[in-house]
Length: 337
Image (cartoon, rainbow, N blue to C red; front, side, top):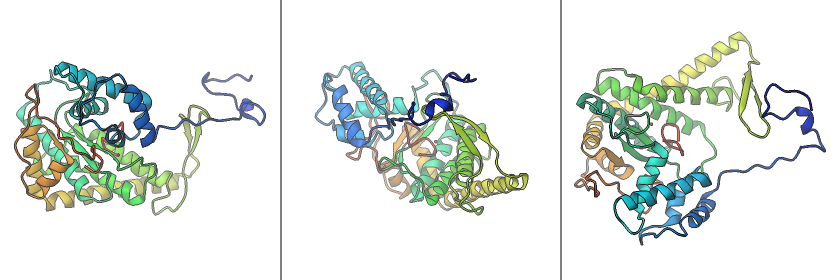
């Protein structure tokens, strides 16, 4: 075998016909596969009458078997802490939040100004996502600190989405820019909290230009990638275009991001009162689902705050399991904005 600088990469000589040339692709389970996996992991778990594994399966796109096992374990632990003898849909919903968005940072002390800023930032993501039909459907928005984030807007696709249209990509860029715009309009500031949104929006715009042929440069691919054959991880990208083309690529990426920024700003400017309603509800409840966001945008009441045994706002669980309730920002997951 020829020597290689990376021990985890097979030498190309081994991949010639007649050698190790067979490839087996193990994809993530689809909705039926996820339901079957959940049945295996819940076989010894006492479930409540309201638990529907098919609903949970539809609400967990791109979950691997290990993610689903972790989800079931977390739900059982949550039920046990509440001294319940069965695991309910509420437990699964709370467990999904923990798996997707991280553990609540209960020790984090947040000032009123910081909490207000976070509420408007996340309300911006939620409002723009709800107003653009091509955006990945909103699932939940929260200002409870989890992981490294002070707040999160989570999205879930309506099915096992494997493709992006230009309209969907542009919509997600607009949703990503919405948090920064809300900071500027309602808090009169620009904060580092939008750094992840900006990074993801820029990355998506660059893919549109360099990989997907969705720009004025035409249906062309820029930048050749070397990949590990079996592991599928990127090793390096070779620049196969001129300096003038690189400048055009940068201009196209900038134009796509700016277009999304302007689109999101127009939506937020036109719905200022709805933004305030969503942000104030977040400050009161800390968590809103997509149906509650929709009602607030339409100017309707979302009812009194329901609390669980520990006094915290209780998440709403509907038959859809979060599927038409909306991944660039925090969403298509496991992936929570």
